[in-house]
Image (tube, rainbow, N blue to C red):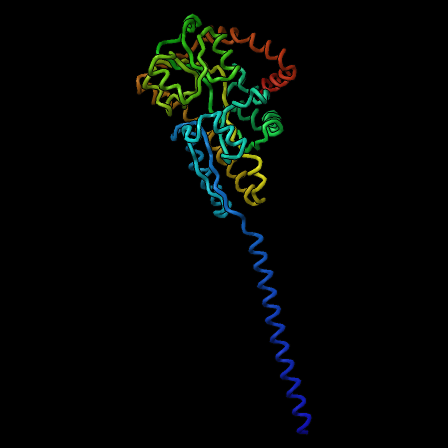
Length: 350
């Protein structure tokens, strides 16, 4: 009996030890698996520099600060940080666009500066083509806008995240422009983009192409008499200090596009990409809203600074539109695909 009791005690002791070891092994294995899972789910941290040429209080930078930056940082769980470089701090449009292409800058918001190499990106800037903000948004957020950004990605290797609005372009000047004859001899700054240079010349002005960063000084020193931009730029860039009149010509619409370097984009995890895409959509929707709604308040502000607004009558508008028609004829000769695209844009939303 004594012998059997000793045997049972030994068996019980061995069983207890084995169970304890097994439990520890299972727990260690579980911890290891848990650590692996935790390590696998932790995204790498990145800082995203976003460059643009707008003043800090322009709708673009308001939307970046109030929507894009906080949403990216929140939705990515803090793995992505956003730094906004407004007002040409990382160079003018050409410089920061090149920076995004080569990867020294992660993201940027250019206009259609790339259209010399990617002609489809310039279609929506053809004169008197887009009717209003609703029309512009429908075109850019639809199949035509996607066709444009697909071409951009293929040719220049940058990934487009969202379309946003600069707005309808008008002429601000140091004297009244109220008829076609007033364009004669007007030294007019235009962006260094063929469509704008041709447009200014078609209207009868003496065109001086230059980047936005040089415009204020050129007007202050009377190197040029006027420039063209949406009035939000006139306000945010302080052009009212050196200009007296604005012609509400609405002769063209300029969009912006939020782009990201392709190599950087590929490095992001699926979760991070989703965070950026969702934030980009909310930023763009907000920026469109701000741009459209700010027109009347910007106009009131500029009038308060002494600027006089000239609203062209039907005859003047018709004369301006007629003056630029040869631009379309030469455009279709150079790019046979453009005629169908322009017609699709005209029919959108009708």
